[in-house]
Length: 256
Image (cartoon, rainbow, N blue to C red; front, side):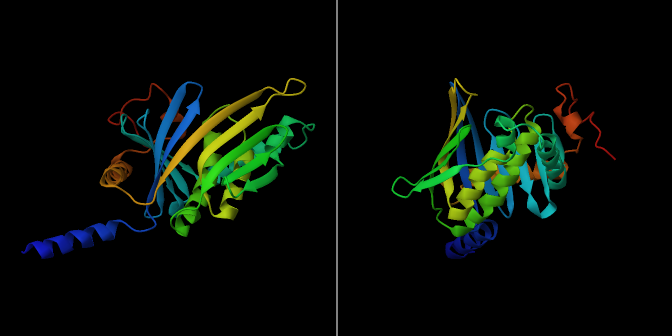
């Protein structure tokens, strides 16, 4: 087999796995002096979120209406359906439906003053309780924003389910919707939360996002490994998964 034919076969094999719809985002979230890093990879209709500091992978599988959370160290996975997430979110909303006006009612039904500076590419959502300042960019392909929009909405909801004591997802969902209307992706996000009057003390969290409109071999290798975990690791309930004393896969039992 000559070299030209070999090169052609390689190109065909690679093109069968990679498309213009595949891309990734490198994330950094600054919490005080700490930095949490992750990589979010969009490939073949699924979204893979890989934490750097913690060996955990979250897969958004929209074709099956679910998230799968994988722990490679314990060789386990758990599943959360979008129906389960939506049920939890609705319970959160109804739980404060009759609360007196204030922070709680704002978090459930947030109203922002929205503005956009085209020169700085900066979107601002401003309120008395919470303000977002977001630098954004138009992605290389429109399909990137189209994939990102539904993913980030569901991921925002999932975070409120998994993180005990976290804020309701509705303010961030408003930001997601604003970005989706513009067909843009965030590259810098600063959210400032204000304490109750009269102090009005601000506390700000910041994140950075680097967008790459292609997948490198290292990202593809990570996704291939995640898919192997998805196919072979046993499934346990969310309660079992979250137990710190949960045994490794050899002793864990998947639910019937």
